Length: 477
Image (cartoon, rainbow, N blue to C red):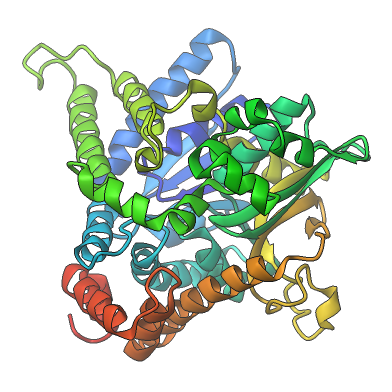
């Protein structure tokens, strides 16, 4: 079994390697190939993984490790792959700071995946993602592509346009939400136990948990009525207990930016740095220190006392503890930091497909199977939305692939929010595919957190000035 990780020099890649090496799902991964355009970061993460592997062997947690290779060439990395994890970040953390600052400079939300910053991220990422998809289709047509690249919904939608149902998206935010609710109810809500499950529906970073059923009884109304229970659910604390009760659902935590936009902007602008600036410095410091540590005490003047692995672990905890800091008034709780785990879900997804064991998990998938877009609307997951639109819903996975499970009829207000957002994102996808500057302008202007052609034009001009990739897309570079 060969797993390729695109964006293999990324900070969270060792988490994926550890999950694959331990093989808790029973799947044996023989080889992991890392690919990244940044050779220096690739070397650093390789050194972290080598230290992690040595510890796993020494502890007896594993008897053998997957063979590890690294390359800067996409074609070389994906050739012969059984599974491809896509976790690319075009422009790095530095580009994210431009995404944030251009929007904030116009009085708009400056955030990685929500608002105009998310559209800018998509606009520079989608051309690269489409090229990668075409390469995979050519040299690894039977590979499954599991997408972590943000904005995950529209990127997965673009990948599916080339690769069909073999492209699936994963996000850790609904995973964490369902785990928190399940912990309170004393039940594994995605184990596939008859009479136990969830109704979760939406787009990536715009979704709602609308039912949590245990032994045939929906326990969510009881949770929503219980202040003490809601205090244990991070999403309810962030967005407001009264609101989640009024709405009758637990929202994905990213709904904070839609429901409390002014407060989010106020907190972001009041901070000394944006999240992107914080991560750019934090990761820059880490990669520099880890590279020096990998070279040994001689380069560090004999004072090197931390290994790349130790540096990575301490940086990881700080990164996770400060996640979405602008949305909360308190330090993040340890149980919430541990609430995600997309790498574990990705391994379960791989195992189910490779071995035929059944799993249930929330994934980003098409509204109907690829090739069936002309089927009656009633056969779609959400009949009111386009057939090829990517939704985030509970799915069953087995050796035959990914099978979305039915959801209850979706309320008009939620349909409206999803439609408006994805319409803007699809305009950005059109711009990425065709080089149409008008489509990009339309996308920025019609985003629900912008809703202004004048601001849309200024955003586009700002991102063209700040991102060479975007300027080049429209022939202005």
